[in-house]
Amino acid sequence: MMSSETFEERMKLMYPNMTPEEIAQQKKNVEGCIGFLLVVICFLILYSFVSSASTTPNHNLLEIKIVSMDFTAEPNNNNKNSTQQSHYLPLVSARWDLLIRVPGELVGNDICLQGNLQASFLYKNVTLVTSSLHSYNELELGAPQLLTVSAVATGEDLSGAIGKEIMEAIKERNEVQFGSQLSLTDCREETKKGTVSYECDEAKLRFDHLGSDQIRATAYDKLEPHMPQILNVSAVAIE
Image (cartoon, rainbow, N blue to C red; front, side, top):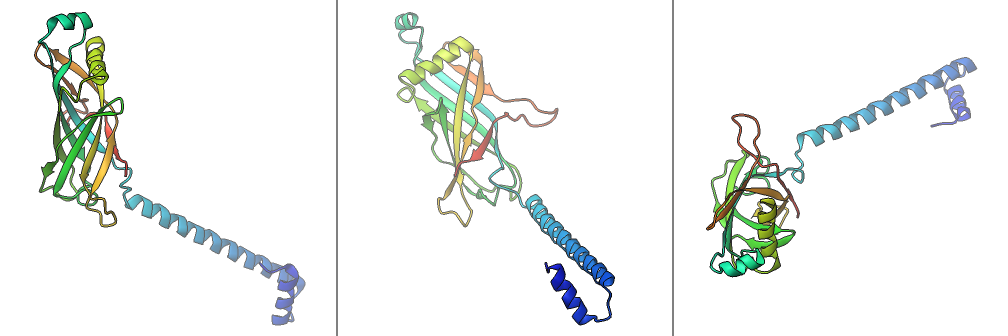
């Protein structure tokens, strides 16, 4: 902004008959106009930023929800004597069945309408098994989708300390927690990886059946009446 002396000199050159009081008043008027314009410009910039943020979804914050996770395991009951001594039944096999809900904002934008889904299941951050590729197709653009994926682990996958910890948790607490990671076909033009990966929170499974041949558990939460049951577990992108 001009100094008082420069402003007064210019006003005297432009308006020789203007008194010092009139020049001071004119200076105040100019400063007021400049201040008002600055306020208007700042408001327009802020309004534009807020409008853009509210209308453009941030796909990095969109979460895939786990609707349910089923776990079925078959313990080895062949050697009962060693079982009684060690209080531990080794697992012959285990199966995970996962149902996920993909938000509509991701369908067709991040995740292709036709592609593959793959899941890995973890215990205490250790990967137990990774499923084969499960194909899906004919998803509806912009609409939420339910997708399923399953994986089977053998006794070799569950041998050693990890398998023992899982069975001890089931026996002592009648529950166990599994983590999961998802991989879906990526259709974004700016990426070249071909897949988009998501890391899920751990799901706590409570066992409702402890038989001699199989043990089963399901994890899900109840929401509002007449609404689908959705487990309170989310998956976020980990690109």
